[in-house]
Figure 1 (cartoon, helix red, strand yellow):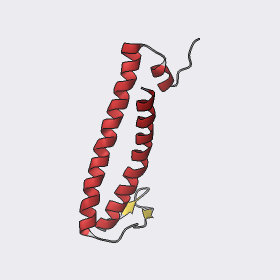
Figure 2 (tube, rainbow, N blue to C red):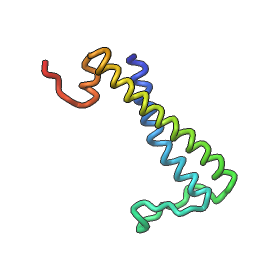
Figure 3 (spheres, helix red, strand yellow):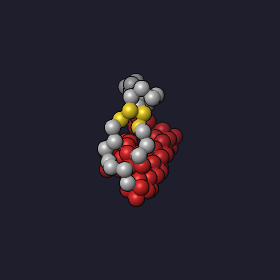
Figure 4 (cartoon, rainbow, N blue to C red):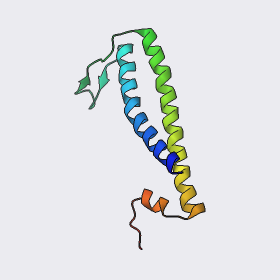
Length: 101
């Protein structure tokens, strides 16, 4: 369980970093503007305009988004498992509540 917890945390961080970068590259390859705060700040393109690359990155972005969603669901399920079935202190540590011991 410790290995699964460590692995899921590493994967969560990898996906949280890679998903926006792939999205930025996807929009750049599609030739779309990338607004950061409303329309006041636009991010520069990081890839050249290429419809074939846009298509590949869009597919990859969808896969990564579903992976992140699934991993979040697994994470929530693991928290509920620890809190409702095992009744150990893992859920308490995940919700940042102090132990009363």
